[in-house]
Amino acid sequence: MKILFIQPPAGFLMRGTTYPVCRSMMVTASYLKSLGYEVQVFDRCVDFRKADKVIEGFRPDFVMIYITPTASLKDAIEDSKSSKKCGAYVVWSEVVASAIAEDVVRNGFSDFVITGETESKFFSLIEETNGSKNFVSIPGLTYCKDGKVVTTKNENNSNLIDLPPIDWDLIDVKKCFRSFPHCNRMLYMYTSRGCPFKCAYCYNTMFYNSQHRKRPIGYVLDEILYLEKTYNLDGVNFSDELLLLSDEEINQISEFRKKNNLKFFWGGETRTDIYDLSQLKKMYEAGCRWLMLGIETGSETTRKQINKIMDQEQIKSFIDMCTQAGITTFGSFIIGFPDETPEQLKETAQFALSLGLDAFLFNYYVAIPKTPLGDKLIAAGKFTTEEVINQAAASSKLQCLTDNYSAISDKELLVVKSYFDWLTFTRKKKESAQKRMFIKKAFDVLKHSADGGFSRAFYNLFDAGKTFITVLYYSHAYPHIIRKYGLYNVNKK
Image (cartoon, rainbow, N blue to C red; front, side, top):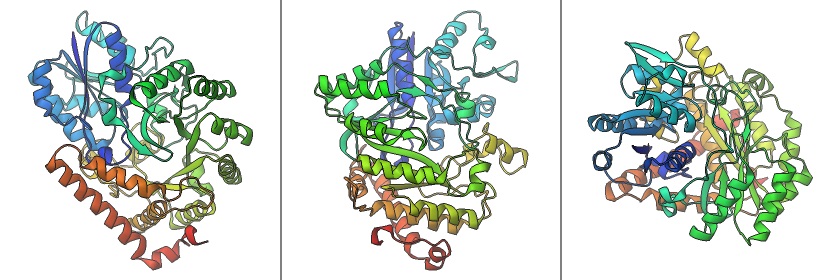
């Protein structure tokens, strides 16, 4: 049995920015390889061979395609067509595929869509396809039967203790390294899956059923040891939905680094109400150098709407503690929530400026079907699942606002986002160990945008230049909007 795993490309969005190897793809490929299947991983973000030639050459029985950003949908559809020509079953997975699963199988893009964890489900699907075809017993599966779409209840049924270590030899690891603050050869890994919170905009509610499950930290450390000794890895970005390390795990990481003379630094995404100052200092000693904080808004009204209840004074205090501990902080914000007003956006902008963050990550709200906010928009007739496919090309542009459900003009949203993007690019926080860190990152973006031959390099560099000019223009050309939202340059305080 031959299985091909594909991560489709997404242009500048995936190759030019901090590029993540698809976690689920690597875990599932490693799992099925350990069971004796012939497995090949084709990561089109760093492997620029023609997809149809790779598929024809391998002649797989199954093709599993992971749709990570919406921008990869177009190529995923073409990869599916090539796979079906070879007689393979096509399976889609990841958040985007799960959100529009019914449309995917109804339109014949894929034979099956798996929602949530794929390891055990995919194995069961292979077994049933070659046996009784009793697919209804497989959780989180969408498929067509007798012309009707069938979707089974999603359950996260993989036992993380039983999953083997990731087989990094399945890919060209060196092509996947990216520069990041504090390190130059960083990879994405994971210590857990899911999140126990239920933010109304987040895919976690439908993808992981708001369940947080830990992976044994020893497995993670063994993989890091192999990668540092074999490939000189010097950074790990934990791609957990919520990085939630216990004191015991922090101590294990610290002791493991010392025992094996490891130099890697690490970080991940977390909340501001999890760690205290003593824990943050221990994390720094264990190699933690950055944390990404999902703050999202500075408006209490919006915070209630999105079901992300956090104390804003506590957020400020946490960021100050990170600075004391020497940990770089990235603050993530979302603007343009449904019905958000200019007053609420101003509260967010002012709150962001009041924080001692090293970097601001401002993003537009994107409606995701099967999330509480997304389903409200669908019920109100403001959004359809078909729009996800129609917006695929536009979503590959970093500054693109595909749909605006707020009470704020497109131009004002673009000005506010661009302003914070520019501040991050020029950030020189006095207390930070990584002054002007994103200028360094910009050169890394240009380097990797040039991968893949002349035509791809030209397109990506053009897109990068266009994005830079857009940010520069909108962050400076509308002083009346900047004044309206009380924006100022925190670098000149």
